[in-house]
Image (spheres, rainbow, N blue to C red):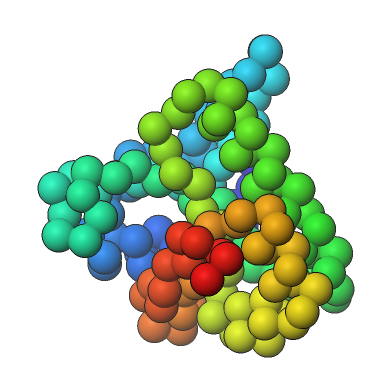
Length: 142
């Protein structure tokens, strides 16, 4: 099993506070005998805002020395997971969870914003101190 990201439990708590039910940690994606693991699988049955939705969340801390190195790894991982989900006709929607300060300082930069938009990466921005979801960015083109 893969190691938990630094903010794994923080994002888990934030999702539960929003009414999500965590259905799996280290959710296995399998394609052609290969197996990869997404940090969290959650569903929110019959909720007010996100009706009967199932999501997968890959948590990234961006605590390394280089923001762009971390971004390269996160985007690559996200794209691979998304491609597997599309190939297997999964009903899950994939999100990349990033801390608020990283989003505010890093993702607002032109290069990072361009990469997120061009790759259609859905973001879940969370506050690691308050352990809450700050915003969902479902359509990076807006």
